[in-house]
Image (cartoon, rainbow, N blue to C red):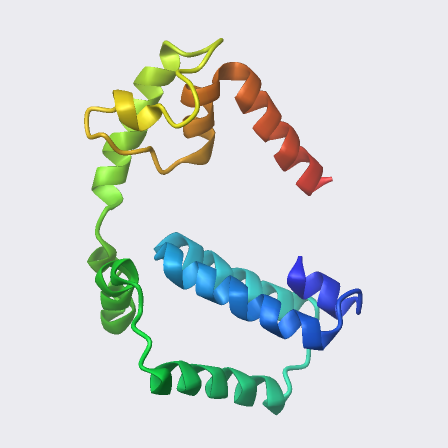
Length: 164
């Protein structure tokens, strides 16, 4: 949305820059390899499909921001350093870890969803009933187990609005 609104000039560039910086920091703090890959992919698609001309000033601003962050001595979040940085440094996605563990959680969530078709277990209760005491990293399964069928329908409605 930020890219689109800025391209349409509904948001001025001076306001879009700090908003983009905030989104990048949020992405770093979530330490999500999937989120990082999706952000890069969406950016490339938007630039190519939108025929956006990248000015040297954009690259200079990005380089200055990265340099300022490095010179500030601010540490990267621990989760980012342990999960995302090794995968980026080696170029090996297997360094990111957690895929097999997440698949186990997804299988467990499918089993729990069988018993929560109508009414879920309650908000933030999945981790309480999970054998690993962790939430499933799959939004529709998490909503289905915690909120039941009404929550799943609401989520699909939200996705439908985005598509429309």
